[in-house]
Length: 278
Image 1 (cartoon, rainbow, N blue to C red):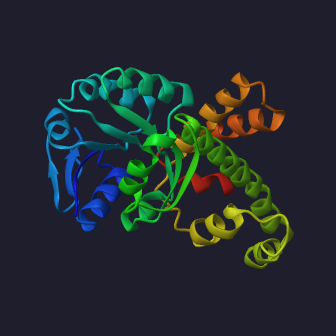
Image 2: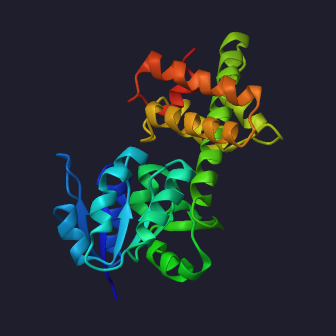
């Protein structure tokens, strides 16, 4: 039987997750101050009202600032909450919020996702989960309709650590693919054949196997993930590895490339533009 779940943030990702939870039989209370559409079957209301009616809240917000803005309202919920934060945030911020909410009997876990709007709408997300062992069964049950892969990385904060490393590597691979695209154009070698050859060998990655055929060579550039968010994630990842004394010249270079792309194309362009924009 379905339960009542509050989804905070009804953008491309949160809206898709809310719709997926409705299809799974849950009562979904949606919260978003913006003028965007409300998915079918979602009851839209103010945050305090939604938290009064739900014991589980899924957060899908742009970043750490927006999560902090709603933290006081989460703290004032009239009953203990399970807060599943699917936003991408610095791990230290997540641990701070979890400790703050725990003083009021609430549980916060970090569950940033990969898979884009299509994965959110189809229930085929990949989740990077930071969650104490004792809360794992309840969290896995709540995430079941949303994800085909839930990677329990460790305690609170570990999910965001994994998400930032994933996006850092993706950012590096896209930046490297810029050279592949340039070589194909300059040498006259057919780019699809060049890519197909690489995808049989050790140079392949998810970028060459998925991003380039689906969004670059097709010319669609409609993955749903913008340059601005990728540049932000690469910056957050670079900050994290620097704080841990684990950085390298490559990390600094790719951070600079993504910041330059954001300035060149604007933050709203599809992040796969990295491959074709010099």
